[in-house]
Length: 441
Image (cartoon, rainbow, N blue to C red; front, side, top):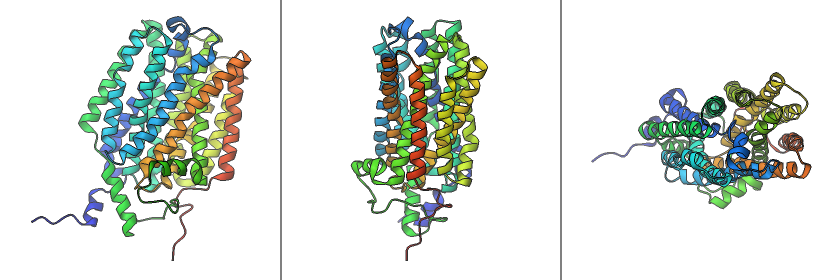
């Protein structure tokens, strides 16, 4: 007769920390890099081809934004769905489902007769991102310690947005040298196939680590400062309870969620309007790829230091500064001219995004109990990526109403400033070392 494992055996089996789980940590970095490559292949090429290849009328800014809008609303919804499902089926299955949904995308791009097909392709892209990227974020939160969470999310988003930047640059050159559709097809099918095979062969499910952490909290064996988990939340809250918690019931989570939503206005603008704006100013596809790539590369690489920065000095200040710096970068785009100047302000915007982006994820993870962390992160990421849809629709309508893209830039800059002010006023510091929960008698 075998003896069931004790709690101490389970806790030692699922040890937390980057060093203890280095293999899976790097596997998840590889997966999010592939996710970044998949979305990045559209960044510099697709908006420029909208009119010539897919029949989008010149000046139809809301229609141009439709492929970003569809992506954002679908990805946001799938983030929440994936987060909830990951609590039961595990993180690995969600990752694999995400890659399976991406397989048709290169074929749709190759054979699409109209822009409607590209919008449909981005519905699948949203599902892919909602499952695959969500699982890499949650998996790293599962296997790392609280004091490493900023570092882990910084590395995760560095790999993802580094992939976005590299793909935008490569596909810009490929599309300028070869047939644009075939270039995107070959690039996309190779990336997605490699991602699916490597996820199937090498990824592990990290849900047991989350359960072990929850058991440690329940038994009083958790080491380190006590996080400020929201009070009066059930051990297994319903989907509605989680959604309400991150949306309005918890003051800090609500502030973080709105900031995540608004910061995606920046990325929606860069995705759809930067290429059109720069192309209208006379830049070639490779030059556009460089400017958009600078934004993505600075955003990605800077997260290697902004993530650890938030582990040391806290989450709130980097978030607020990041919102304001990114907003300033967007505003400066309209005030400068030339590829060098546009690259500089793209870098400024990227630094701002790097300060806020991994820090928001880490902050939500700080105050989310391991029993429902996947769901809470999914709820936050619902609002964050719905920002693509909300921002894209708002920017498109404003541009159509004013007859140009400039008003869209000023709208995003103002929204970032106000959103940062909301976080400054409403959110508390979430880092458990800097602001631990009070001891209960």
